[in-house]
Image (tube, rainbow, N blue to C red; front, side, top):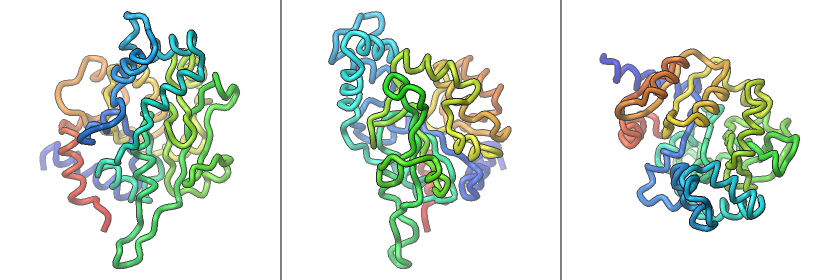
Length: 292
């Protein structure tokens, strides 16, 4: 069996046994034929700049463009524009639906602002029509919070119905959807401006912004990065801190040559490249991991 086939088999096994954590980046939106929301940081920066006159030098730099809007048009304007950018419902890709239908996956990380994984969890069912399929209600989400709006509180838990709940409620969830930079649903929480990230990065080395439940669930588990690139320092920092104290073996589905930064980062943190397109990976996994 060649390396590629071995990798795919190992990933199948880790997912089926609940030993993996799916970590989804904005690239997953590329599985949607006509994605109705920005699917990359530079595209979101261009959207913000189209609504507010942002200096030319930061028009394609998301955190800087967002900071300009926050400074000169108020935080409420920034949140309103983010809600406009992600107002459209994003239909989950088959890969996301497959992950949502696997209650053995204790933790799924969604590191973008869209609602696709949220919608996949809402529409997921356990079982089949023949044996009495039921909608999943055994999950919830934890979202990162901006200190500009929630000073002193780093995250908030929401149950499957979208209600804010205490951390103790999350202990009973089979699957936790962790959205470290926030999301459009259910409560328009966004970490997006320079200030947002400065606040988080000041504390993230000592893990303060990362919920204890997430820290517990990552232990001894393998991360499977989907739709992620590691060219950007922010993306590398969040991935590194979220996967801290997990296993010593991970995978990233990432086609084509890697940049030097990606090569160094992935070598340092034992992340193996699975050199296949996300679309092909979705097809291959769907053959063996689709719900029975």
